Image (cartoon, rainbow, N blue to C red):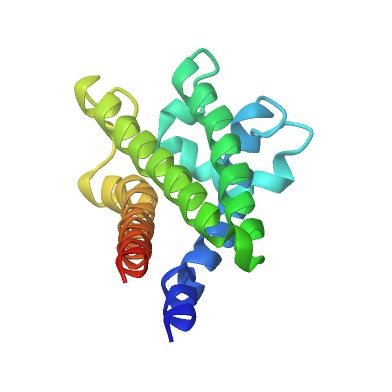
Length: 178
């Protein structure tokens, strides 16, 4: 009974595994757009891979500004988050490394939501330099909602993994005292 409970506690839900895999595909696409500039931009050699970005950079001009260092630094950190997220899924495939998979998923998720929150904060405190030109509906639909997903879902993964780790620690403590 205790073993089954421990397995349930240490199991990542399907939605979290999907986020860590599919979300990371989008992260990779986003990071490589920035890191491949100007080749990824309109008229660039690989423009066809990032066609939606030709519209997105009209709403978030940070992605078009070749001299803006934060978006480049963010893209490099995105790749680290990507590796951590995929590593968490890999670790989860082995019952012996599931506790570590929860820790790695927690770390990757905290990195993602905190970095995205920082992105919002820099834009806000920077007097909306890169998005302030948008009309309200464009700001909401082309910048805020797509970006907020990278705050909300990682926060949910953070909450879920933290609760599972606390439950696992509690179960281990209760098992030890019996």
